[in-house]
Length: 154
Image (cartoon, rainbow, N blue to C red):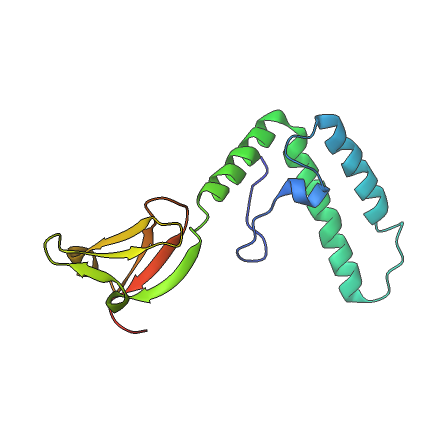
């Protein structure tokens, strides 16, 4: 069973990118791309001089082979697709601004701070929200933007 893993720190191993394919490609397209890349990258086919070039070429060859093994099997491919979708969903919200609490308008009767988004929506922070943390990530009520609010000046 092959592992779907991270490579180079935070970069996720994406077999579709390695093979130069879209997620909706067919098994036959994956196979053709794999065979083309393996022929191009095979150590016997390319002339390399430095040990760095050889190491990089071998690593790329192995990535292509691993990517193909993940995608040629329907079960493994489904698992890869699920992992990729999960990682896309977990992407951080785009931060449009970093603000100090003093930049927001405080409404005593509601005991909350508010700030108007460029779309016309509202960012709301209750007074109690910042009792336990020094900063919060707040979503707009109308769009996909967010702001990061700090208790005091950074």
